[in-house]
Length: 348
Image: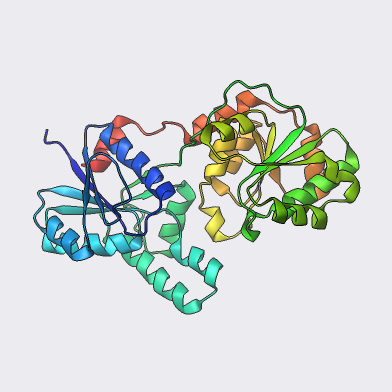
């Protein structure tokens, strides 16, 4: 059988973290003996099997001459390039990795109705013209059908994010709560602190470890949301390297991940959740993360927040932490659940 060739297009503005996530897809395809070639308009990205281009016209000229292959687009703008290339070269098949709902993401940041309309049409077009698509959650595929004109019979592949860290057998700190990441408003760290404040009114057993780089902003959030008598139970942490993150998370029992109940979050697959579970943390998460509620509940691997903070605190007090249940849930949700047969069929 002829070896499948896949061209993964990297835009000029791609950052390293997105490339790392993209490379996981490339490695996945290579695992079934596909030949993966990265076509990059960003010369700071370095990896094996990469070809650099100064501009989009040079890329299109290259694709125009290619033999039968797959063009793998990771943004709607790359889909536009792939669409043009597939018209110049009928041997190209266009695949699209739908990382998120770009129209909802942009509107959440810019609140521009005009931009929302433009990105909405771009996403609908991208889904329509792509032969096959990759999604991050099952709910995302359902939303693409309901809202973006995706045909129910369109061939798709579910590829979850992967955790870069895993439980290192460190001893857990009893009654430890944590949050790791930025302090943007959408991350709802204030709600996590309010939860902790209510918890401290019930018991003095728990301690909150907040890992972030912006300690001054974190101190302001703590002052605004936690009673002065409880603040000594909060410790600010800084972790940067992967081994530091892994060591920190491996010692924690519970971790906060609170997202607003909006469509953007309903279809999401947060890397933070993957890292929590893989390090044996029982997450305290909002019910907006629809794909993960059932497995977490089934495995008794965390706390699903309701709209009643007192009841949620009571649920935590009754919950017995389990590293085993967390890792089991990680394997079910983020593990290697794609068979070689399914992957080969998708790439055919």
